[in-house]
Image: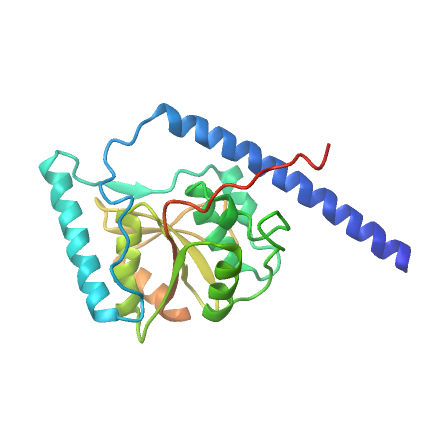
Length: 248
């Protein structure tokens, strides 16, 4: 029995190493592509909410005003928004297919991958940032491991989805995107928004091969089913680690 357990642990470590190597290559490719295309318009990439998420009224008003200012600025510069969305391939999204009820970490990880934050992107695996975070989560657990690992993020809760949907709109407009409660006892990734069709884009970690579209009313109901909670990563990303090729 002990031999079988050791073999199982050894095989798991091999698969973890393969996943980390694949992700490292994907990060390198993404950074090369990003370097070829300088940022054309991102006036708010360094902007953060002025207060913590507990002060709902002041923060929501600030976010709504800020979003309106950004939209106005885009129209003035001839850059009226049509579609804001992540740009991850199906192969990259497949890293975050839910293996064991870790839907919160899968959703946050996808946001980290899109934002080139390896700390948040590798929540599901044992890395130099810390041990793998697996299984179900709640706001206190997320805040705990973010503090422990040094992940800069807002974990936003409220009395109803009227408290969190403005944050989700802001997350899309600032290209941060978000992990959010969606469906019955489930978390999914806010992948973008189609302004032309007024549709929310969502990636479900149970079906990462596709991007689902929701009308305003359907999105509100999807979010309401699990309650008002979302996690938004702050930018800039966490500091990059010193990587050692331990598998060689």
